[in-house]
Length: 425
Image (cartoon, one colour):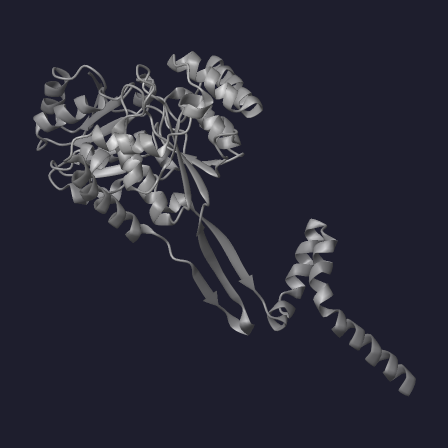
């Protein structure tokens, strides 16, 4: 790892990726895949499965059958099911506490304002698979959706290139969480199928879940036809440490990040001794030496990391100075790995600095709101004048007429009274 003394241009010097970027060739390739799946459906899925996964698969094999799920239980260790139940309880408890309730506000003259939250009806979840199936991503995406009340969840995950099967743990986790709609399809073609639908796969309303660069680019291209959680880049961790940090813990956590393909590691520290120690132990990543913790906070906020570990004397005291991070882990016994697997909050997090404006996947990610507005005639009468002025400024006269139509009887009565006064005179 190379050591940098912090200055404003440091992150530019290390060529850190900011936000999502795809090269023109990738954009073109993914666009072709998405267009073909949209136009040809299942036949395109089978073509790309053969091209990218090396599997010659009939259309009837796209959807996983009940018998496939039943056989999956026979292939896993018997201790896996109770282990999963413990994790499920952790994740469920967290998201049940996080859910937003609908609300109403009552005002004068019978005005009622509010918001009704309703779950998204149908969601597609992408689970990376193939040679390294991300089993934890199954429950980290399904449970927030289930807690939110999503009625229909469809999983797309690539089959193993040697066997054509889906990892049995993925099938078992999905089944235990009540999701049986699973498809053997991966990559950009899976995202396109979920977004536009095929004969076998019905269109969804939102797509969530991590994936490689093809998956990320496909999600970007279908956004607007469906909603997505985020467009994620390489996984990353930043560790903010002072002289009290255990170098062994720091080393292990930085090296763990390297297990992710393209993973990026940062050590931000006030300790030159720690920096020199880690430099000799870890090859990949960047060390940024800061004068004090205040400067360290500035660096961390500039990075806006996916995972932030704070290993300082009083980590809780640092929390109020952190404005941008996907998940924050406090203290030496809170490695990012517990967020990946058991703590509760989802490990689907914003990357590449997008924590400045994106939030982690949550139950709220699967809920949409409808605004509620109720006015009485008395309340409406009190806003006639401001509406009149605003519609005149914007040149939208029919908007004003829409409101004034509610008072036609008053206008009619007023004219009648004036006519009567003239006659009497």
